[in-house]
Length: 171
Image (cartoon, rainbow, N blue to C red; front, side):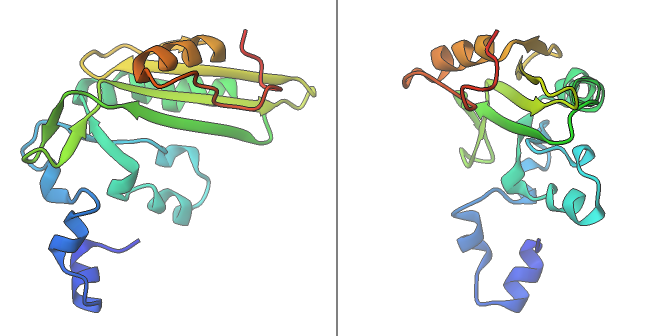
């Protein structure tokens, strides 16, 4: 993980070239939006893995009250309790693009943030769930995986969404 300054000093890549393919810190400055982690650092058990989550390719503009409020509760409490008996949990997180941007139309502000998970428990059962939040509210809905997939199918409007293998229960 390198900063824009480190990359431009150590290579022949320019800041403009970096900005052509990803967000930079300046995109978020004075925007009123948080850098919402898609892959949260708190769900990793080593410093290297935690630090890797702080790239801007792992962030979307998130409403500060949601990011610091109910989404944080979901990441730190709900995910923790649901995965307590799971040796390995598979997680997919995403954002549904919105109609507004920050930083001169460079970075899209998503309408929704969502997460899904599936794991095989120590009791040899498979559990799965989803969560979704509108990016303009401080409310997270924890859903069955099938309910999340149905919502995403409607929101993306590009065909059926299936997030995990059929072994992960939808109901």
